[in-house]
Image 1 (cartoon, helix red, strand yellow):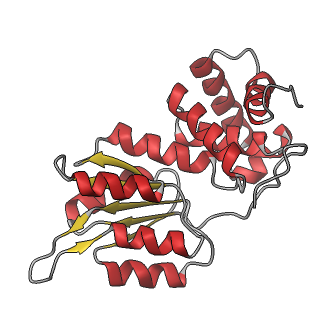
Image 2 (tube, rainbow, N blue to C red; image 1 turned 60 degrees about the vertical axis):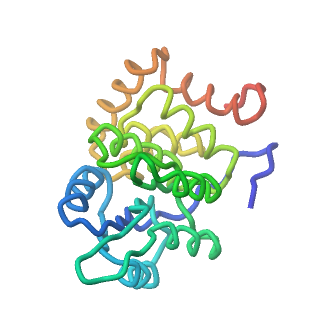
Length: 224
């Protein structure tokens, strides 16, 4: 449900973590290693396994990464995009990233139709880190408009995942003093992440940065 633009969007529930659907074990481990710095990661090597993990999940995923084509010895090829289509049909599709062969135009078009990003593999660490940052920024945001703005801010400034998480929570109205409890980080760690945010964005204060997100969301009207 889209939030009323006259009020702040209400924070949503905490998410489950990342789901990686990748038939190549080495690539799956590489993705899990990077994404695991931000949230727990569940890895599935086949569609049936991924579907079982989705059924068992107690909350929506923070993000889902799928290989466009799942090729396993002795098994018929599967399409990871089928999982995204099922999640979208259920109303539980989080930020999603599709890894495809450079020439797989069909995967690119289908990913676009599903609202997912599509990149040629294998992915570099920086690309995985940016995906994690976008996902954490919107993890508890139920409003599509604010989600789009937060993802744009993350991409523009190349925020790190934990920096993006702070910006997302503050943009939802969480008080700065509550951020350590909300993120599970020590107060000094949160302060270090806020300082890194300010260096990366050039904002004079954390409050100014949050106001800029809200101005974009509310169509230019300052809100604080």
